[in-house]
Length: 83
Image (cartoon, rainbow, N blue to C red; front, side, top):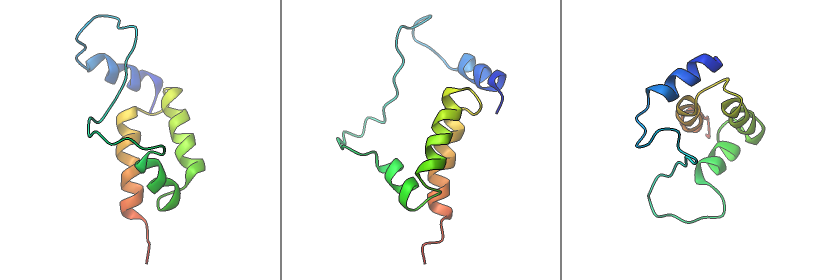
């Protein structure tokens, strides 16, 4: 995804305040772990750690959206042939 597409998606989101100093994401499930379960499954069952880290980098560089990456990573695990 282009940088413009990622920027447009962020602009479309509702923000409680204008120009917040910090933005953080959480799933609020209360789980505390040392390793993220999605990362573990993607690294060991899905397409692997190197591609996951590249996807994270692409999000930070604006090449793909956070939403796209967070949908794609679990889908890779579901599509994995583990038989």
